[in-house]
Length: 341
Image (cartoon, rainbow, N blue to C red; front, side):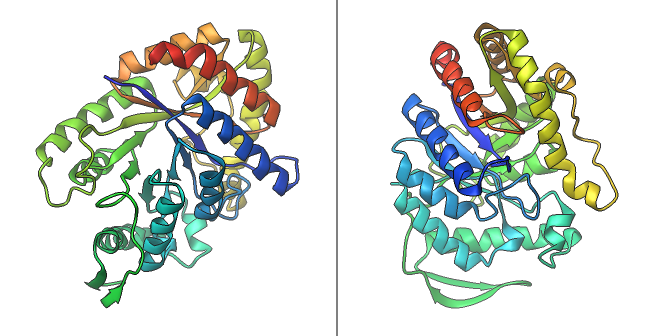
């Protein structure tokens, strides 16, 4: 089974000018592109230091022009925050600008506070998401868009531009829940999960079983994908020794935690699904940190225990400097990734 590696990125705020942050990330992605990383997945967040790319399409258009091979896309577009016809046009542009390297991650959003800033009720977001997705798929595949639903209506609206990939760029979904896995399988979407290796293994097995049942379904959004990509996300940091790696990564992980829980704290609560303890995160497979030999063993363990064919790593997070992230990526691509080619 062919194994692939991707990058997941929140594009967190750091103590550098915003223009510098963007330029440094583009440099990191140019290095990832040259090294053969398969795909760059960019999160969408709003009103939080966790996400300095609240309009992922704008940043991805810059990535497309600074790279040649790496695939790229949001993980995920928060569909309740977009007008679907406008998003169809954006997707077409990005797929053309990237030479057919675009990947469409979609979701409804997990933060009720972010959606509330846009007057979107979290409890109604699922219904909006599913209707919007139907409109987007139709818009990518047809020259004229007709739809009559609860939230959107179109009467032969012309779609003047097309995606480069046919019938559409591949769709992705992020989930580990049974309902989410069933939704992704029914629609033939590639998936990225989270959680310990054993949880991911169960999610991957359930997804594959369900996807096989829906292989010939007209609801399949990725009929061009013969073998689905199934993976999980891990924070990653490599250095010359285990001790050095942990000494650098521990405080950086606390900064990441502060960023991811900020909106929750601002509203008087703290989510229980995150931790600021890097050692605990490593013990529960949420992070892979250490020397080249250590992380190589952890990566091999991940593929063996999960049965997945994809691993998505975060190289730039928390308070890690650009130089530290670049060095970590260099160690991974030269001393770890070749072992899984």
